[in-house]
Structures are given as structure tokens and as C-alpha cells.
Image 1 (cartoon, rainbow, N blue to C red):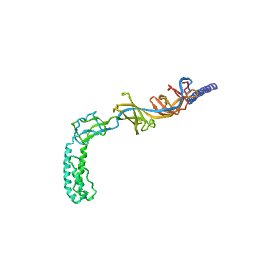
Image 2 (image 1 turned 135 degrees about the vertical axis):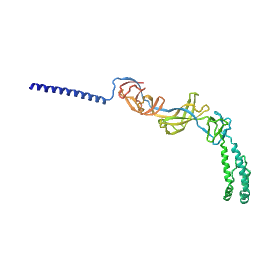
Image 3 (image 1 turned 90 degrees about the horizontal axis):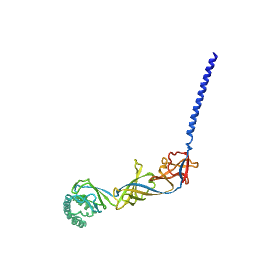
Image 4 (image 1 turned 180 degrees about the horizontal axis):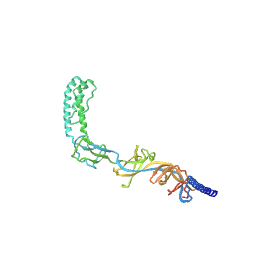
Length: 375
């Protein structure tokens, strides 16, 4: 009876021993993985990388933008009166000198009514002259001259001075002031039948034809000044700090194969919520320029001292680049991006003499072992 019991105990001991060994192996492997995860990634396979010592210098901040020209002075033409458009040369592309009539709207009806009102006004004042001469002899001569200067077909002359309160009350009681200012109001309205050019320019748009009935409030065209234009372009907030009103600009047209000089005329204070860009306006003049022409502009934003120019694709999340340490491994070094120039980036944060790869390294990671080939 004792022998089976002994064999049974021996079997249990063996099973327990095997289980302890297996658990020990499993724990050992897990600890080994944890240590490997905490160790830095160091590659013992080295690759040859062309590199150069950093040489800091003063780098010009030339900001490149592009856009289409718009006329600096643009006038949307609206009619404030109703009538037939009489101007025969009211056509797109027609040029007008400063002060020249762009659009003339028929005013015969109002002009005739005004002539009648002035004649009636002259009669009212003449009737009052006898009382003015009798009661206010000091002012009689001025009022006689005023009546003599009234021409039914011309704008009313200025009223004589009314320093005498009693005379003013008398004139007002005869409705002379009311009639005078009513006529002046109509004279102002008569002037609105003609639209004069505020500056020399061209009619870039005509929405009606000569001989067409124009209604009050209707748009009839667009008038733009030639020779002076603006180019609106978006810039990043990072570049904005290098710009100011008056900064010089070089603009080039590939279509005309010519360069033009310009300046930064305005800078918007609002950031576009969609693009996070800020609009700037560049002023440029030239006889060959036309509205809608596409131009590429290079703005002089000064220079950044003690900076470095690197390929744009060498940036890691825009905050760091790889440098090469003394033991020939890659180190992720924090930097500050000052500006971008096409495919290049101007950065700061790198010290003179630091070894930097000449171009981005495929599959790079911090701790990668390399063989720098110093250029």
C-alpha cells in the first residue's frame, strides 16, 4: 500500500517542478522585452550620409506671392434718376478723360420745370421788393441786385445776407426761403442726370445700351482708372512679421516677360479663418498693365541674422531637424522656422559647426548609426 502512495507523490512533485520552470522562462522573456522597449533605438548597421558643418549667415527674407491685378480706383456707376440714356459712346472699352461726361440721361422735363419755377420765384421776390425798400432800406439794394441776377435758365444766385432778424421773418413769411431751397433741391437733382469721370479711365463694363430707359437705382456700368493697380495676395502669419507698409516689391509677368516695381500699400488686420492667412495689397503702376493680369511678386522682407537655409523636406513636424552627433548617430534637434522660400526653409536654433545631413534621410530615426561623408 505504501509504494503506490510514494509514486503518486513523486508524480505531483515532477509536475509542480515543470510548471515552476515554465513560469520562470515566461517571466524572464517578459522582463527582457520590457528592457528592450526602454532601450534607445540604436542601429548597428551604418549607412553613408553626405553631411556638412552648419555655417550661420545673414539670409535675405524674400517672400514670394502671386495674384491677379485689380484697378486701384474702380467706380460702380448707378443712376439716381429716371430717363433715357443719351450718351452715344457709352460702350465697353471707351476711354474718358477726367471731368468728361461718361453718361448723360435725358433731363428735358426737369429742366423745363425748373425754368418755370425760377420765373415764378423771380415774380415773388419782385412783389416783395416794394415792402423791402420801404421797411428795410439798408437791404434794398442787395435784394434788387439779387433779382436782377436771376436767370430762369440758369442756377439761382446766392441769397443776400439776412442779418436783420425782422427782415428774415418778413422774407420767410412771403415763402421766399421755401421756394428758393425747393429750387436748389431740384437743381441738385438736375445735375444727377450727368455722370462725369472723376479721373481718366475706361468704361470696363456697360450694362445698358444708348437710347435705353434708365431707372433710378439701376446699375449702368463700371468705370476704372488705368495705370494704377493693386494685387491682393495671402501671406502666412509667420511671414507677416517681416512685412510693413512701404516694403519694396518686384513683380514679374511671364506673359509680358517684364518686371515692375511696386510697394506694399496695405496690410489687412484680419486673419482668414479658413486659410489662417492674412491678405496684403501690393501697389504697382505701368502702362502695359491691365486688370486681371497674373503677376508673381517677390517682397523684400529684410534679412534674418545667424540663420541657416535647409531643404524644406528635412523638417520634422516643422519643429526639428536631424543633426549628427560626435559618435555618428542621428539626433533630433529642435529649431525655429523663420520663413519658407519655395522648397527651402530658413531656420534658427542650430549652432555653427554642427554636422547636418545635406538632404533628408529615408527611414531616419533618432539614434540611427551613420557614416558621415563630410562635404
